[in-house]
Each structure stands twice: as C-alpha cells, then as structure tokens.
Amino acid sequence: MAKIIAISNQKGGVGKTTTAINLSSALSRLGNKVLLVDFDSQGNASQGLGALKSNGQPTVYNVMLEGFPIQNAIVHGDKCPVDILPSNMTLAGADLMMDRLSSGKEQLLKNALDPIRDQYDFILIDCPPSLGLLNTNALTAADSVLIPVQCEYYALEGVTQLLLTIRLVQKTSNPKLLIEGILMTMFDYRTRLSVDVSQEVRQTFGRLVYQNSIPRNVKLSEAPSRGVSIFEYDPKCKGAQAYARLSREMLHLKEDVFA
Ligand SMILES: Nc1ncnc2c1ncn2[C@@H]1O[C@H](COP(=O)(O)OP(=O)(O)OP(=O)(O)O)[C@@H](O)[C@H]1O
Ligand SMILES: [Mg+2]
Image (cartoon, rainbow, N blue to C red):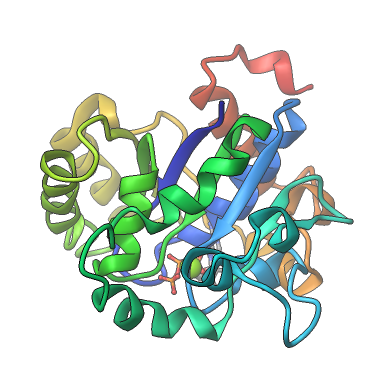
C-alpha cells in the first residue's frame, strides 16, 4: 500500500516541483515503485518529465472529475522510471467544479487514487501554489506533507498559514495526516542570508526539519528542459547528490545504500 506524500507550500517558486520530480526519481532508484501526481494546472512536473505527449491526453482532471480510469491516464516514464499522472491547464477549472458539489468535495483525489494505491510504494503529489480546494484534496488524500521552504527572506511567510490549514484538515477530512518534514531548498552556503534563514527555520521547527538541505544548483533548473530528472541529466552534480541523500534520510537508510 503506497505511502502518499503531498509536497505543499502555497508560496510560489519554493522548489515544490523540483523536489517532487527529483525525490520521486531518487526513491525509485532505491527500488521503490513511485507515482508522481501532477496536481498543478501549470503542468510543470508533467513537462519536466516529458509526460505531456498530446493535446487531448487524459489528465488528473479527467480522472478526478469525469471518472476516467486512472490506469489509462497514468504515463509510464520512458527516460525515467517514475510513473506520472499528468496535469495541464484544464485543472485550473477544477476548483469551480469541485465547489459546486454538495458533498465529498475534499475527497475527490483520495477516491481517484484508491484503485491504484496498492500498486505503488510511494505516491508523491506536486501541489499548486495556493491553499484552495486542490490543496485540501491533496492533504486529504495524503498520509503526510513535505514542506519545501526556500532559504530566503520571508521564508516562513506562509508556513504558519499552511500549518493552520494542515490542522484544519486533521480536524475535518483527514485526522491521520502527519508532517513528513520541512525541507530547506535553494540553500546557498556562500550567503549569510541562507545560513541565517536555515538557522531560524531549524530553531522554529526543530526535528521536523530535514538534516539534508537542497543547495542552489543550476543543473536542477536545467534538467526539466530535457524532460528528465537530475539523475538522468547529471547524476554526479550537487543537486543530484542532495536529493539522493534526502531520499535516504526519509527512508532512514545509511549513507552508502545509494552507491
Ligand atoms: N535547488 C535549486 N537550485 C536552482 N534552481 C532551483 C532549485 N530548486 C528550484 N529551482 C528553480 O526555481 C524555480 C522554482 O522552482 P519550482 O518550480 O520547483 O518551484 P515550485 O514551488 O514548484 O513553484 P510553483 O509554486 O510555481 O509551483 C524553477 O525555475 C526551478 O528550476
Ligand atoms: Mg510547481
């Protein structure tokens, strides 16, 4: 039965999609069967793994709101071993459609994932930069939330709001929801700001923060244009090493398992 992890932070551009793509890939390289659900109408995760192949292609929208069979919408990565449930612009209309439902509007993604849940070890959900119904659906479907936080001024802006949302979901639609961890992203060890922000986040959230941070690494921003994860693009770069270490930390594995 897959563990479902929502990668969420309503602040834009903090590294959610980069983490979703490369953590999925790192977990699959450790022998896990992984599905990445693109749950953002920007479709960045789908594009970043080359999963958008044609215009009329079924997406998470058709599965969640029109009953399209999920097995037929999942794309099997050809360059990367991760399976993808893609998304595109149509998801932008989902909030409105969901809001019209009289009941169960928070459970739509959970119900959509149920039929394939036992086929995977991990299902990662790349959330949109908002706290609307899509995000609530992701948090309702998930066992835990991974929160990427960018090492910049105002880093914590929004995290407090997200934590309140998580608490609300725990009280209403998903009492078992846990916080998987807080991940510092785009860390630049040369700048005082990165070091200060990282310290502040660690002081505030203590053991919830992963030991491993993700460094600012240009290779991580280049890989999506080739439709591959960092492990196909440049497996030796610092970004790849950081996501590999993060995957081991998540699974509580010793350092040399990913040789
Ligand atoms: N560690 C990193 N080093 C360098 N560039 C990065 C790193 N992480 C992310 N980026 C770049 O920063 C930008 C934002 O990252 P990303 O798309 O992963 O954020 P996001 O939180 O998913 O954004 P959105 O909220 O719009 O969905 C992208 O151009 C990405 O390539
Ligand atoms: Mg994104």
